[in-house]
Amino acid sequence: MNSSAIDIPGYTYGTPEVALSPATLADLERLKVSTGFTKEDEYYLHMAGVVLDAQVETIVNHWRANIIAGIPHLAKHSRNLDGTPAPDYLARSNQRFQQWIRDTCLRPYDQDWLNYQHEIALRHTSLKKNQTDGVTSTPYVPYGDIIAFVAVLNETMHSYLAANGHDAAAVSGMHKAWCKSMHIQIALWAGAYMDTEAAGKES
Amino acid sequence: MNSSAIDIPGYTYGTPEVALSPATLADLERLKVSTGFTKEDEYYLHMAGVVLDAQVETIVNHWRANIIAGIPHLAKHSRNLDGTPAPDYLARSNQRFQQWIRDTCLRPYDQDWLNYQHEIALRHTSLKKNQTDGVTSTPYVPYGDIIAFVAVLNETMHSYLAANGHDAAAVSGMHKAWCKSMHIQIALWAGAYMDTEAAGKES
Image (cartoon, rainbow over all chains, first blue to last red; front, top):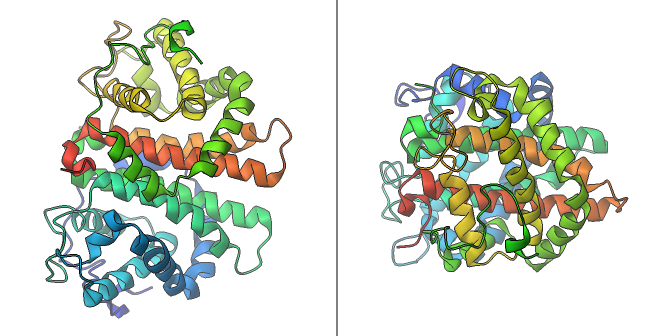
């Protein structure tokens, strides 16, 4: 996957526009150990990426249109401040949401990946929300709401992982790997919301 | 379950010693909606509590002795500062860890539960760690390490939930409910580590 070949509005993975993450590769390694994320999980995540690749639009539409749209305190974060729809904003962020599924499964977890995790988190905080798309929406997404909604991502993901007819053990392996990655990511995102030392950076 | 009947060192659930949580019942309701936690999950969590009740000592010993003890950056938080074991501290906190499994499954998620969630989080931060047991250990547990290790709790929990011979659908229902509760709890714990507004409290 060549990030420069991916034409998604506001998607800056691997470019010089993305700042260095305050978390180091050593911090990432520590998080992998804490979650029990191993080479086997890398293997299953890649398998998941292959299964999910053609489904990312369906998946994100399900999350956005069938779930988030029905929860006002979540839906408002991709709407105008008066609560009216912001279809361009939604369309752009949906494309990045889709690509994030691919990146979760198919990107190496290296410095670029770490940097973009921080960028993703910042774009949900008052420091960077709305800037990428030049919109006027809520000033930030509360961290707790992100964490809470990851429970929905994890639960709904299971059936999408089964879509290519893998046996139950493989689907379970993919799902466990996905869930561990989510825990690594929400730990990293915490760094953008709080003092990085308390969030988990070794001093 | 009568909290006054539970004789665990430093366990203060439901007592006046526990301060009011900065998160309100309305915040909790919002988190439940964000995670998709419903009455069905309450039903399955109670079922899980019945299944886990007799296993909590085995489960916590597995987490502590078989997993955490082998991960120095996690093990140090229940040791002395020089890295030597602190068996009394470990024994006391293990009892509370066991009770936390029961409380997760069997307690009503009311104001007392919310208050104790905040107390649990504070006991992992520099504000209250070590005080309950009068020990000199690490000054705090980084938030990211807690979040990361919840992935292990979730993954290992599955087989314990199957121990009473429930069918796969019931075990899956219990596991999904457990995972949603974990997302609610780690969202609440974030409030002790960061500005409560950014963490998710509605202003």
